[in-house]
Image (cartoon, rainbow, N blue to C red):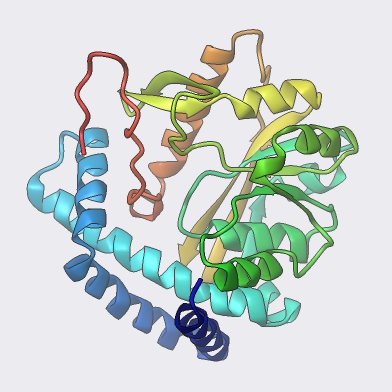
Length: 295
């Protein structure tokens, strides 16, 4: 990484520190402007999002797809700017802006190991901060390092601010996560992206075959853990983090069926705030043999 690149990255992080102190309505307004700018200039990501949306919601018109993708990029930009206050403001500020709902008591008081299915909604970092800053259980998660070393350090420090979480680098594999589960640490797991054929199976996602990681049922089985969803929705006042009930009879003896069930759960969450899911990722990058690529 060159000295110029490092300097630019340091300036960017400093800018986010300053933005952390902006009133939330002003910050969201800046996010709206940035999102509309991204829609105009980030043409590759716009094409990916449009392709994903059209595959998952084929009944919608071109105008509906365009509106949804524009709104998605606004939410994406707003959530990115929110990382300033998530990673630099006090726990008291976070408590004012993060509302945890659902089966909070069941989660915090459960003696069982827990795998938390945390899909890629734009507010996923707010969900993590709510669990670590506002609730009493120490958590663990998997971390994929950023290519930019300055940004990587900023992200890592932000995610470790509260609750002494265990953050395992992706290169270390799943073994440390299984050990943490057995020790009683809830695992915040994001297994809904396309990572290729390795450790994946093809199951439907909105009716389209999607290469989907098997890590959720595998880790739940190895860690003898209960599974529940934790999903985060951006709201005008901050974020709502919903802790779902324990999934009954999960995992089963059939990994493919378990992964398909995971995608069904995900579809039900997306239906509640569809524009806030992470559509700019190539979710259908890996295709079954003989089926044409879509991007």
